[in-house]
Image 1: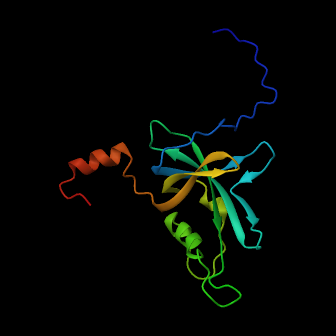
Image 2 (image 1 turned 180 degrees about the vertical axis):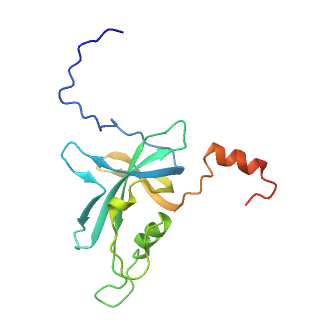
Image 3 (image 1 turned 180 degrees about the horizontal axis):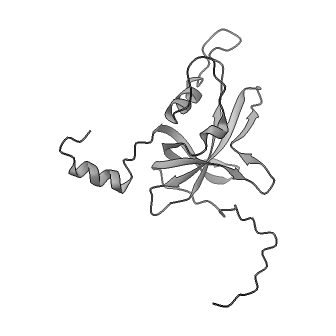
Length: 164
């Protein structure tokens, strides 16, 4: 094939285009590093309106022929164990569960390093969320990635005389 002319002006090589709304269900996900057109780098650290630390991550579907490479944003918010009133903070354990799920330090006083999360894998239950008239993918639940959706793991399990 001979060289041809193509104007790549304004085309972002990292862009995946419009992401698809995934059917509800479990997906194997990998945390990826991503730089947006605006120059934001994910994982992206920030603060909530209540000044709690949070990290926005981008996850990519793998082990799925139909949706391989589709991306899902997720926010991990680090809430205190107790509020100013001394009562337990609802949802505080979610960030600790997330860290444990992806094999990162999660006990006691820790310094989460979101860049160390890149490449970590987990399974997420994807649901749809409507926000400002648009339907988006949302991770509703997570569990450790064990490879059940991996065809090699499934084949090995079928041949294993003592499965799990």
